[in-house]
Image 1 (tube, rainbow, N blue to C red):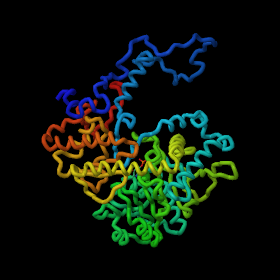
Image 2 (image 1 turned 60 degrees about the vertical axis):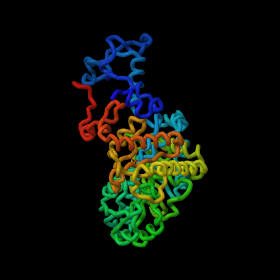
Image 3 (image 1 turned 60 degrees about the horizontal axis):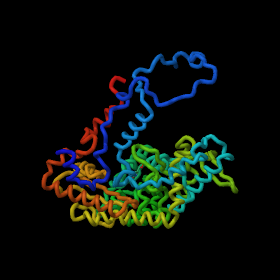
Image 4 (image 1 turned 120 degrees about the vertical axis):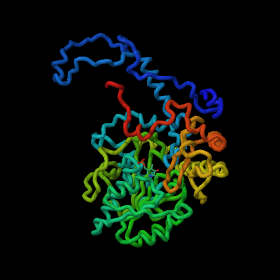
Length: 501
Ligand SMILES: *Cc1c(COP(=O)(O)O)cnc(C)c1O
């Protein structure tokens, strides 16, 4: 099929983006011409010296072979074109479930680039860092208010490191009582980082099967909970997008046996401004600033995964802790019971700044509205696709919905790939693991009804064609630079070098 035909079949001229403008692009080493350059320097007005007087011989290169020689415009166009091969939230809808790919307002970027913050050296003494410290302190206060928790540490550089920090504190808490305990309970719908964090802290992960509604089975939890269990790690709302409605019973059962409750708060965008984890008996909560509070993420970072805790864990907070003494702010690393340092300096400060800007821009009412819109958008998609796709769990869902490929003519992977030809990023696929062939869709609050309608129409038209002509999907996507790479090979043997270099 020609590119024009594929375009017409997908959405015709309405296809978001313009695949026809994705130029062929050679690698930079194949470009340019000897003598071209991208700079013009004024003539030297200081005495010239031999390089040998400045550098040891081992540091001096004779020549640099085959470096491309290009003009400024060549370089600008090359890299701008390459950047356009990338799919981003600024180009189109990105319904990657669990990841919360919402639009990141540009004001956050502008503020993060203010020279007073961007050029602030992390080793500057506290007395000359009052602005940055105040920002961190106030962000902690905001997160405490939103979560209903009593303390916060901004150090963890990702959700996974927030989990690790939280589990280290739980370990320290039990150890101080004389027995660190041996096990951690995890529902079978948990994100993979949860058991990994428990294991890194020396705990054995015990899987709790979900009930028919996709939430924690209270009877099974009660049977599994004992005095060798350090904690339960649950996710609320969980990875099916459902609120753990028995949360009060769950936290009571765990506390009765002396255990603590860890909540993975990666899905906080569904309930922020509406319900507080601190009110539900949660002892530790991590928050993904890069998801809920809108900083650009994906491709491995950077992120920020602050961990919020109750008073009982306060002695174990990672150091340094940002404190306010009178009207001054300071960093305190002199805390003998701390679990230690997690990151150099103050964590990913730029991410903290963006999250602070976002929270202060929205304010309490805006935060609540964002959660309400996220839930409304997900339920709109759910309602409009539920007659076309099988919903394995039918209970009320919040900010995301999970369908699967049962009864379709093509597989979940075929849907994911076909959506690319419609200009959409695929949803999360084959996760959570308890749903066979899962298609996990999280629209977030930032999308308009028109975008959601376009996506719904694309899903329906792929489903219809998938039943009529399933074979035709094996070659999709057809409009992208690469169709179906061998993903295992691409991850294990990435080709990152120009041949011969
Ligand atoms: C994203 C996510 C994590 C991990 O967060 P990272 O910042 O990617 O380390 C953990 N749990 C859930 C439910 C998530 O969605």
